[in-house]
Image (tube, rainbow, N blue to C red):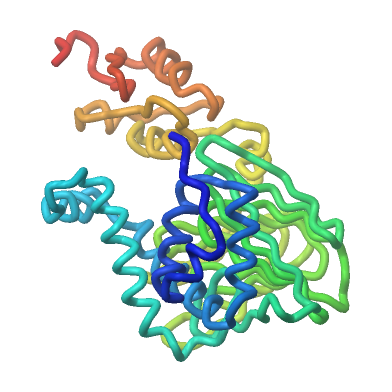
Length: 344
């Protein structure tokens, strides 16, 4: 579907909160060089725009975590118009309402994951801002101005700012591998899910989802600062270690380093993994038909092996050859069912 071309005047006619909500919904629908240009011009027009954007981004993370029950509630409460359009409007209205109440936040370009986050204005010539993102099924590597390389996995968004004293990243969603160029004078800081990871030159991965965080250190050394029991806890990781942080606590253990290189090569491995979890992981990469399981017996089947993330049909066919299941393909999904079960 072709989207209408927007102008800076149209966006400036909105209140800062409404415009921030508009940008979130529009950017979630896809990337556009024209939109990026208008977006940056809008940010530069008024410091209040950045403040509204920072708060709206924080709210958007909560929206992204909506489960099926939440979406169904929105659908049932919609008006006679198409419920999807109403849902997007409801989201925008909710974000705008919250953004209005975020006046205590300092202006932060693109996002503030926590109220204490300070990010300079676009009017500051010492700050260089960049937004990196991937769509479903996409993996991309970007070389930053300091020669660091960041590789984004499927449906990931990373916000980049280079300042005079540090290199600061904000991982909004998804999974990113960082190959950091050494610069002891300018620490490389990654913010995500309420935590910060600091390095000077190293290789590590960060993944965030559902207010949880995973950090895997491949090489070098990083320090993670994460909230724990109402206080900030500093944890130094060593190569081969991973940190898991969520509302339930923080743990440090041995990392699966093979998985880090696998996803960068379009692969994913499972080791005695319930089929339901494998399907959930592979659906992250879906660009067309998604995998579907409705039978608890099928969901409980445990599988092992390495699979291509770009070909879900091939995965389903392989599983059907090895395990007692078969596939039923519809217009929107590839369902895995027990052999012998009649189609619905």
